[in-house]
Amino acid sequence: MNKIKTFCGCLCLAILLSSAFAKECATMSGKVLLPTVKKEGGMPLMEALSKRQSIREYDYSKAISEEMLSELLWATCGVNRPDGKRTAGSTLNKQAVSVYVVVEKGIYLYLPQENALELVCEGDFRAQTGLQPFVKAAALNLVFVGDVQKLGIDDAAHNMLMLGVDAGLMSQNTYLYCASKGLGTVVRGSIDGAAFAKLIKLPSHKKVLLAQTISWPK
Image (cartoon, rainbow, N blue to C red; front, side, top):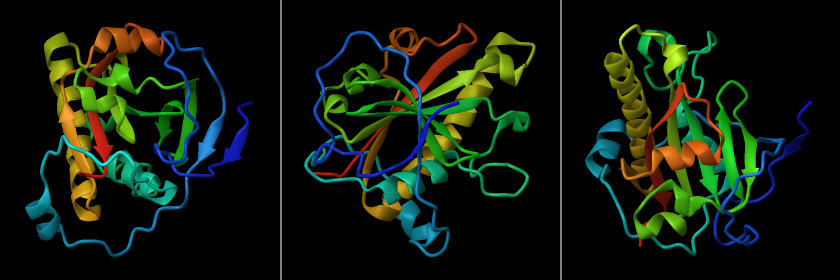
């Protein structure tokens, strides 16, 4: 059984211990429980929409708190109803897109039902989430991974199209949350999907779709 421990500290450059860049990802175990999400209040939707933008220049010294990380992931694809449905739409409600959270300390899989992070591998792999120079120093990068088998549409091209739509819906939720909190973010297609899939040992029916960087803007 995975060892469950409480989350203590911000996932950010300011407080995470530095680790040497590793070329291989050793499989790890363990879960990190995120703080309970406060679902009331916040910026009005129209104001958040007016502030939504892509940002590529960041202040790497500022922290993203554990509470903010929890809210951000819940906004992206968290459970918002008793029946297990999510904040973002999902083709046929298959919930076939997963989110990997890549920070200086390691790579984690977000578990929406538990509002928790599952450690995939330990080490700093941020540079492998994209081709732009800013990704390796950002507080966190999200990587959206689609499960072709789980979606189960009997048309390969349409399968990938709908997985991309689902990832786009989730990414837009991330954008709106970041706009409401003053965070900077940009969604990116510039990730070596095959290399990242190999890094975290994805099976062939799971495909890297998009990546998204989040940090405080400069």
